[in-house]
Length: 114
Length: 110
Image (cartoon, rainbow over all chains, first blue to last red; front, side):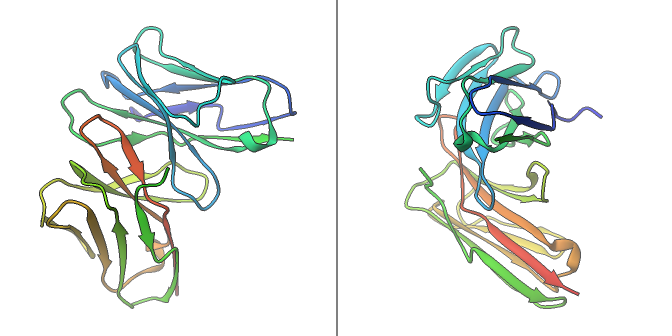
């Protein structure tokens, strides 16, 4: 399967703990996006990378959130000192260079903060 | 900030009925995508429309992009239980950002 993959699929953590999620985009896709989605709502943009450069960050992304894409391939999203309000589905999507506006999504990581 | 409003938010219909979902915005987008999402999974792309007034058909699904590229509609003919899911529209701007709509949850009852 050459689609976007995310790991883990589910994460349960206690409030105050740090968590890290990984996203592997489709090979050679140069743009990578992170979104957060709560139940019954559409995804909300968090940040995106073009290759290894983080080009845009949403105001939703507090200083407890950090994302990296060190080699322009996979990306990680870390949440420090998790809060119950961080509970959501975290989605990753990638877009090919010159591929217009088509995003391909991964299956998401469901985070539950107790 | 949600720039795209979808209506209706929830829709429950009988198998065989037709339905239309609307996606409206005050912003102009360079393109607009429609996705369907199953519970616990990521959105799956259905179609991308680019040109104002464009109409695309995907089997029983018909997608239209408004002339001003601010709105779109999705029409499903003879809905089937397999059409059940969350339908999302997303607008792309020239800065490579995507803004998702509020979603329409469709249930098709056999």
